[in-house]
Length: 384
Image (cartoon, rainbow, N blue to C red; front, side):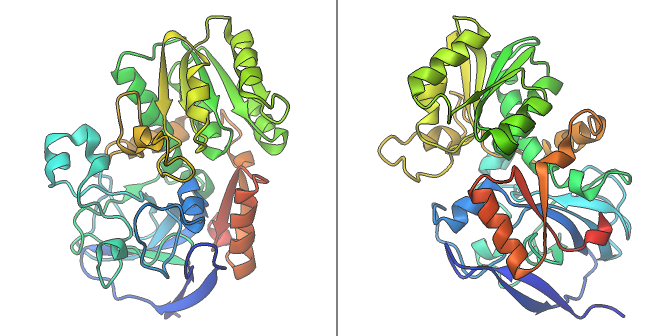
């Protein structure tokens, strides 16, 4: 019997408790699909929104969750391939990116390498005033819905048939890390064998350690906390050494320790994945003269209005700021996960939570308290 109602998690505003509501199962037109969610991560962006840090008004209540992987359970006859031309069928495993460039605005046409700064992005359609969201209704739900005719900027990416959906749900955050490193590569500031420091050992920091190694780093050092589970996992992912900010409590102590590890001159490359305003000025001191700093952790002005440090990331600047990714970056994340699926302990990143009010609440709380690396909500455990 076809499920007539679909359960979705909504929040009525920042700091609100989750509420699970039911919405009608949509009719699926010719160029649309209904995707059953296997896993959806809790992203730092979700946490910023729930802390009230999002820089623009939001249409509460709505459903969060964009690091999703699922299975197509219903689709229209004209939806036959994904954004990269791979065939889509009932049962295909897929992921959806949260930010989908429209493909036709000024930035998309003239600066496709910066299409992540699209002027009319498809991002939770309700943000743009659509009565019917293009994604029913965010990934913290039983299903999402995509309609490529309603919003042509919508993009679907097929995952390998044998890729676990838990692994597939990491493709979006990993892609952000790949693009950040590629920003340095494109500027001629990251070369094979370079020494890199990752600031922050949350999910982006852990994934950045893997991305750096896959893209040619000679040595990777991680700065963060707490030891369990984050620094331990950073070493399991290949960080040569870790610097515990709870042990080295001052900026001067951390700078001295990093320089002691990498040699007195400093590192070639630093990636800031923290989201803390003080991390950028400190991270610059980890570098050798002529080194390169990539800011990918600051995208709101929370706590940093007086410094505007977040603007380096938010404006995707060349010093070097890196925000999100473009449509063509996503396959790089999927391919890296597929190629390196047995090389890193990906599954150890993810702490699973059931799709219940209590499960969603715990997933958010543990992510905020850093008791997990990647809280992951699982609506349909059997899909895993």
